[in-house]
Length: 169
Image (cartoon, rainbow, N blue to C red; front, top):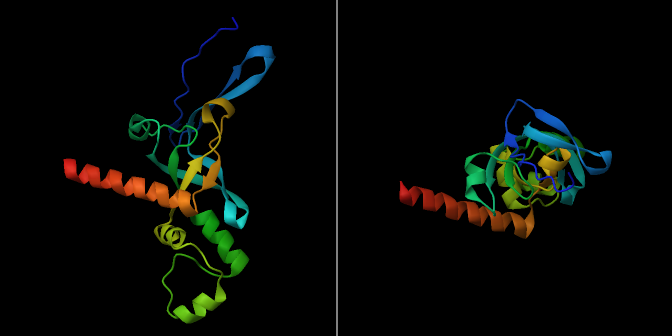
């Protein structure tokens, strides 16, 4: 009984949320997420966390098949809805990010420096994030917004992937 190997959860990105309760060794409980569409994502540099919608799985270092099948696993790179973070930024700093400014000098003086890549993403309404929880073990897809060098690294990977797809077609 203790050598039980169960089939993988293969948590999918779907609006029909499904989480199962699994009894495990010692009478403990794990929550197996089979389908999810939301999660708590943390914006590290601003020290703020918001519940937001998962929109798309865009990259997975371990297996491209997981991207094609929209499978949520730990360290998968996903696109999340930027609206909750945009709203928080507006409320906290009084600046609407992602909008083109009419007077760039006044806007620059009013707001603190924000990474150009992140600003660009806010303009599109989608942020790149990494899942740091294990959806098949704890039943949630939580993570953090990508910033700095990590964001640049994954943006480069996505550009390369996009180029490869266009070349093949």
